[in-house]
Each structure stands twice: as C-alpha cells, then as structure tokens.
Length: 201
Image (tube, rainbow, N blue to C red; front, side):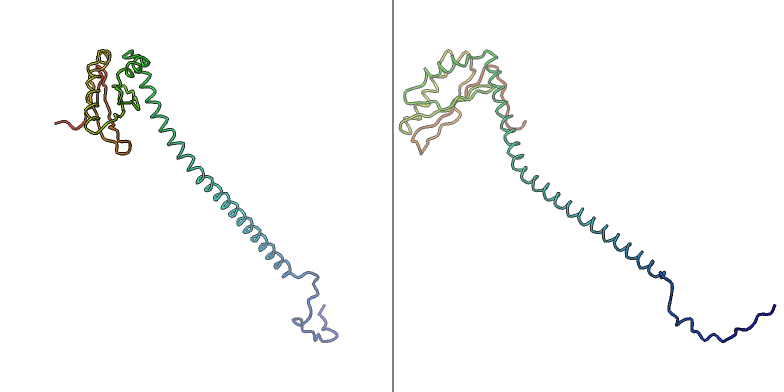
C-alpha cells in the first residue's frame, strides 16, 4: 500500500523545541564528577591529617630523645666511674686476700712511724704496692730534710721491709697555700710486676 502524504505540513524546528525528558544525561555526568571531587577531597584531607599526626609524633619523639640524652650521658659517665671504682675494690680485695699485709696492722704500724711534724693524707692501695701521700710542716729546707728523714725511717723499718721490695720518693713539692711540704712515697710489693715505660731500644 502506498504511503500517503501527511494531511498537513510539519513546520516544527526540532532543534528549538524544549527538552521534555524528566532527567537529563548531563545530570548524571555532573553528579559523578561531584562525587569524584568529594572523594578526592576526603582522601586528601585524610592524608593531611595523617601527615600532621605523624609530624606531631615525630616532634614528641625528638623532644623525648633530646631530654633523655642528658640522663643517658650521665648514666654512661656514672657507669665508667663505677667500673673504675670496681677495679680499685677488686685490687684491694686481692691485696687483702693475698696475705701480703694485714690492712689494720699495716695502718696501725704506719701510724706509729709518722713524725710529729708530718701527717698522712691518703693511703692508696694498688695491686703492685701502696702510695702514701702527706705533708710536712716547717721551713722549706727543714721540711725537705724531714721528708727524706721519714723516707729513711720507712726504708729501715723491719716490718715494712718484709712486705715491700722498695720504698721510693715519688714527689716532694712546697704548697704555697698551706706553707707545708707535700710528699708522695711509693711502696712496691715484693714480686710485683710493674709496667715498663718507653719503647724498646
């Protein structure tokens, strides 16, 4: 059957007619773009918060480390001093245990040898011997002579001769502040091994 022409001409301009679709496609495109932008904003915000928290934690840790440095350094220094004192105590224990000299008897006997013008300030026990430090009153020449006289007394002492191989004068110097002559005697045990100084020739 042959098609019949329209009963009246169509004068509509389709491009200019309004869009009567209830939901346009462009709405979904714009909605999707907004959702993507929101997701990116949330992600960036979360990362910024995480970075800020990490920075705060880093600052707190660095502050704690800096605060602990002083205490740690002091602890190390105290440990080093403790090890030094421990070595001294061990050396004293070995000295007493070796039976070379009874400590109390040695101190009492040493006290009986001190001249009137002299006084002992310290008795330093080592594994190789004993160091006596003291001072002598009197004029420069008189005090020096008294120091050497006291040294001879110790060298001639029979009790000390039984424990010590040699008794030497390590130093003698005038103390300008107290006007006394300071001296230091070294008493070496018999059979003690002393460290050699200087290189081999």
